[in-house]
Image (cartoon, rainbow, N blue to C red; front, top):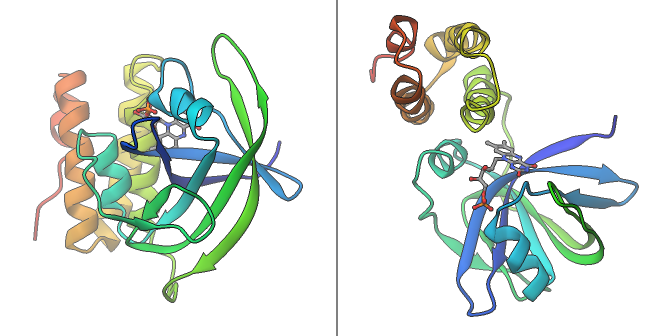
Length: 197
Ligand SMILES: Cc1cc2nc3c(=O)[nH]c(=O)nc-3n(C[C@H](O)[C@H](O)[C@H](O)COP(=O)(O)O)c2cc1C
């Protein structure tokens, strides 16, 4: 199995509208594939404007926000491609689509890295950030997964949030917890929420 990097991918539509969404980039040598499930605005955008930026968010609320209806995050222009990137990022890559593999379920776009840049120091791993990342992914798959399994995994991840989160990570976690509580109204879902303090 190849390495997958979880990133914030930006694309633009033919009319210039920016679309920002979390995607796992699949490494293939020096290239990275982006593989959106249909239907997805990202597919039409990449067909119209075959470039994308992939950023590592410096605030995990960007990933949690994108999967809970909060997509209005600041972007700034890229250097080599006509697509902006997430502004608050540890780093980003600028990629050009060099191959398309069409598929009725999940087409794939091979991105060739034109430039890669670091923007701020990465000072340490944080377990709550990883927990929010896992929870965000789970929250996009609620319709495919067994609710008991999802809740068991989320209660496990919640421990890291309780122990290691700062205010931003707690807020991000609670956005996802609220989404899960709304989708899975079992008693066990309600206790996913963490205190704001
Ligand atoms: C970390 C992370 C990685 C994701 N990776 C993918 C992916 O590779 N392909 C995909 O279709 N959805 C992925 N998703 C789910 C999409 O972000 C989510 O379904 C989004 O709403 C789809 O965006 P779009 O349809 O507006 O383009 C991922 C979600 C998260 C949180």
